[in-house]
Length: 212
Image 1 (tube, helix red, strand yellow):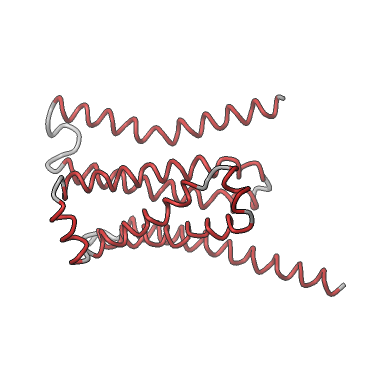
Image 2 (cartoon, one colour):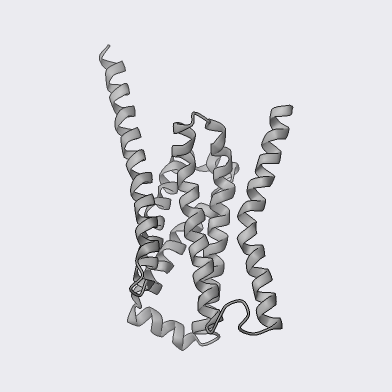
């Protein structure tokens, strides 16, 4: 009972931490409305877009870091936070996309069609990342996990190309300042590298057990 209580408190704490950037953005929006130029500078729209996109990618990377952290720290219970973190990452990405549509497309279907036809690179690759995250958010519940069986794990491997697409999206948007893409790229390499090493070791253990 005490363990369940501690887990519940920990989940609430993580939830609040993940919601904090959204709350701070709300405060800045209120400041900007009250006194234009006080929170976002000369281009509020781009600041909000960048803020939401950055946090979407950050939390997505944190979500990917849960499994390696649980293995390295030998804390399998950390995996219980992964679903919530993934849904928060998806929420930030959806808001980022919605803000882009409202600011660059508005209610004009012709503009949206033009973006699709002319294939604006950063927009398209970012949209691909969002599309890959949608089925993961929908099927994140335990009921979907039971329905899909072994296929659930295969489907949720889409998080890897989604993370790569999100990183490429940021890279394309970086106009001469590549520090953030470099840091996020290194994090991705480390996370993918840990998974590759873990898989190789697991296969070797299975092979060794079968040969005994």
